[in-house]
Image 1 (cartoon, rainbow, N blue to C red):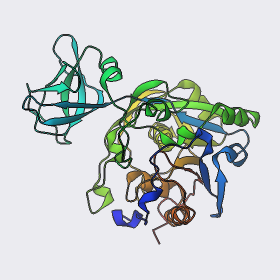
Image 2 (cartoon, helix red, strand yellow):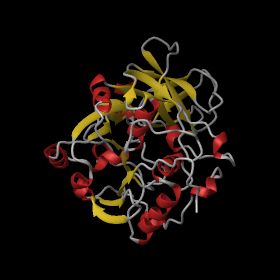
Image 3 (cartoon, rainbow, N blue to C red):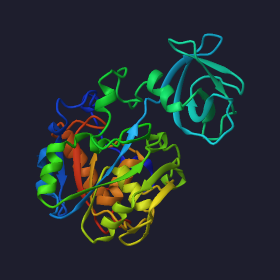
Image 4 (cartoon, helix red, strand yellow):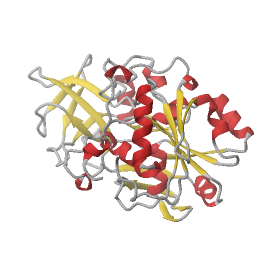
Length: 354
């Protein structure tokens, strides 16, 4: 239960989606029923699979073009990933950001942004997690908008394209700050939202700025030794009211689930306003789900924290069995891939891997 290898499955590389589906709602949907039965459906079937009168909670974070390419003064290539604004003193006319960067960098050093005459300045040594603070010119978001690249996941083996700026955002994307998309939301369309509303299903939002730590590999031999990177979230009052209404809660993605569960103060009660979380839910973590009843999410990487979260939610044996079924049925995996619909089991710590 606590070894990363307990959460693995064989995945042919050709099943890793490199491009989005031709239409957002053209994805397939693997439905793992509450009774354990597996159905092969289409994402467009979602409204009829959810309980009438439910509340669907989406993450309205917006992916920023956080990847900057550049060079050190010596000519060596540098790649910088901007993570979040940093409350750190920065030179006049600049803003400080917590970043990850490849290459030897020291405080006071500079990075020339590729294709420009703009220099970034390194402000700090690396922190224990490998991050450091870098000064960007002017408003950081405006700088990234002009010079940055969409930070596609490493398993998408191609450079980002102009179309990714739109397709790697959900229809809910509103608040800039994420370095990865809440990918379950990539399949949603206005047409599906209308059909959900026709069944009395309300749409609500939370904001959780997806950080690099969500996808960081587990390097410890025991998952209990792994520490999640902090992610910022915000819970609107209107969403908290819907959660407290007693209606079934459907999380559109693991990030929406983490925000709701991290903000929970009691059963069906969440704290309104901003917060930050390092919550790591996995089988054996002892977490009791206080808010979410149903989960829509894409297929996740083997041995990843997200796969472990899904196993804790819907049962390890059943989830891994569904993933094996997905491989046989040639589902498309990961960020630009197909989706799954799962239902909570109340045996979080009593369902060891097969």
